[in-house]
Each structure stands twice: as structure tokens, then as C-alpha cells.
Image (cartoon, rainbow, N blue to C red; front, side, top):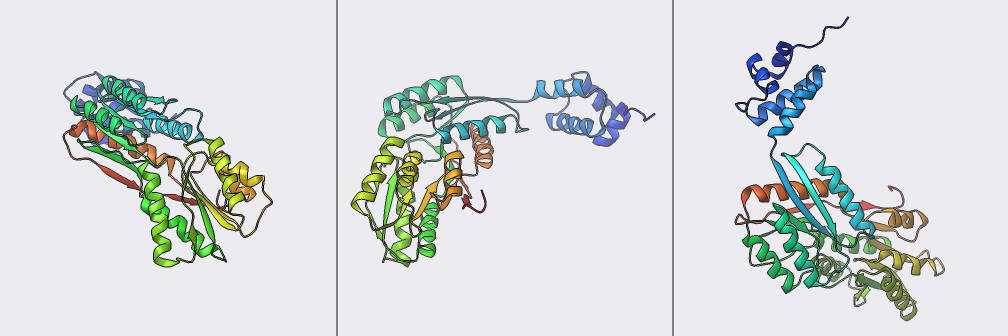
Length: 343
């Protein structure tokens, strides 16, 4: 019969004294939390019989972080993907226990977003949001910061008088990478249509700016059409794509830099397939994955959602510990690139 690990065995494996293990098992407050965590990991590895008691005590002494996140409409695939990734990250072994609240905004007007942010700030210790920039929202961010609750912008940068952290992509690079794909793959330069969701999203403005800067520098023979706003709506994106295809039948491609991409894909599928037409989209989820496979999309630039979620929560926790008066954190993530060959 295999001998069951004892407290002395656990103490030796964890590199602590027997008395330290006993204090953890008995719920003493005289043991530092990192030591408790080390003993817990050791107990898991050796299969210690009192693992449940140690887990209970470790969790009891872990710091709890009440974090709140505001996302856009819950019926949008991007919002659901981000929310799911955040809840998975919150269940991981972060710096303490995370009590996460994710709320969705159906009404994206500045007044509504501002009011919801202030409300969430009253219930949480650190908050984050994905929203379009607006003076009303900037004022609300400062209101939350003045209460001592830090604010982090997700995906698209936000500004206020106080310090606002950011977790997302380097959108200048996103735009230039999309342009690089057109330049290197499209055989005959021509007109490129551009769709953005809302010009108040700084991330999309930077996408377009980087996109144009690449062509100015490397290949001005492409003609970049004026960007059309989809207002983050699939129906509007379909309408705008149909307009572009009708007005510019000689377009060589389309860059979808904002929301509503499912509408743009539907419009493209209604047209006869052109082998010389190149389409770049934003974010990988079921609809864009399918479009890559069937050839409606050729190239997708996407957030690495699991990394993004972990970095977002870690930034919010760090901001909470540092205080709202500390300097803003700027976490720039590497983005993923997908084609039909790697989805």
C-alpha cells in the first residue's frame, strides 16, 4: 500500500517547517499569504489528504478584487467573446480572488454610457469599458476617478483629465499591416473601400491613419476611398458595402475596420465571386472564420482574446493597488493574423 503523505512530508516538499504547515491547516493569521499559496501548490502536487482544508484557508486569506467591465451590446459576437474570455481569466489563479461583473450596453449614447459607468464605479473597486470617446464620457470618467476608483479603457483609448489606463492593440500597426497585405497580395493596384464603425472610436481612426500612411510611403498607386461609417450596425454595413460595389465596380478590395462586418460579408456574398478582389476584416469569431474558409474574407487581424482578458484583469488589479492617482498603464498587445490556412 502506498503511504499517504503526512504533514512532515508536505512541509519538506514545500520547503517550510512542520509548525508552519500546522498553522495554515489550523487557520492561523501569522502565515504570509505567499507561503500559504506555496503550501497549497505543494499539497496539490503530492496529493496531501488535507488539501480541502488548506484550499479553504488559502482562499479565506486571499485578497478579493471587485472588478466591473462595461461592454457593448450582448448580441454582438465580439462582446460575447470578450465577456467569456474575461470570466475564464477571472477563474484563474490571479493576484487574489476576482469578483467580476460584466455588463452590456444596448444604448450606446454618451449619456447612457456615462451613467452606467458611474453606477458601476459605485459598486466596484476598479472598472474598465469599451466605448466611443465623447466629452460627456470623459467627464464621467473623471467623476469615477475622483472617488478613488481607477478606470481602464479596453480596445479603444479614452481620454479624461485624470489617468486612464489602456489595454488593446497598437492600432497604427493594425492599419499598416492591413495595408501591407493589400500591397503584397493584390496584383493590380486599384480602389480600396474602407468601412469604419464610428469615427469616435480612436482605435478605428488609428487603423485608418496607419492604413493610409503605409500607402503614402510605399505604394501611392492604390486609391483609398473615403471611409464610410457603419455605426456598428450589420444592416448599415451591408448597405454601405452594396453602395461601394455599385458606385465603384472596379474596386480591388475592401478594408472592414469597424463593427457590422457580418453585413459587409452578406453583401459580398451576393456578388459574383471575383478572384482579384481582396478583403481584410477585423476580429476572429464564427462569422469571420466561416468567411475565411469560404473565401469571402482573405485576411483577418484579431485581438488574442485569452491574453487580452488576462492582461485586462491584471491591469485593473494593478490600477486598484496603485490608486487612481498613479500613472496610467498602457498595455499594447501583439495581434493575431488569420487566413484560410490557419483558422
